[in-house]
Length: 120
Image (cartoon, rainbow, N blue to C red; front, top):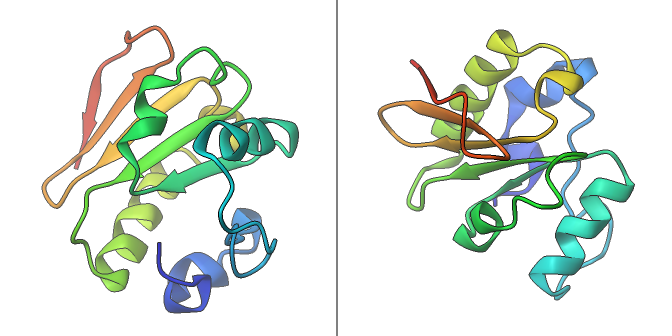
């Protein structure tokens, strides 16, 4: 993921409290399952490029994962995340969800694989 300073729209939105696990929390090199556990403990929505997190639905009842398709530029990530935040303005709206953002759409599933929705 790009450093958060490259996501100006998300940073301007005060309710987002966007933080980068490496740049802001100095937690680079953590194993994936530890990152997900940390996100749950900290009540964070995890935004990632890593497909590993899409398979870890057992923990996602208390957190959420937003997977950004590889190759997206920072500006596109910023725009897509803003569209998602406008659709789901409260953090509680994300809990238990797996959200995949591609260049064409935003796909939302709950942790059981239900509630399949497309947002564009």
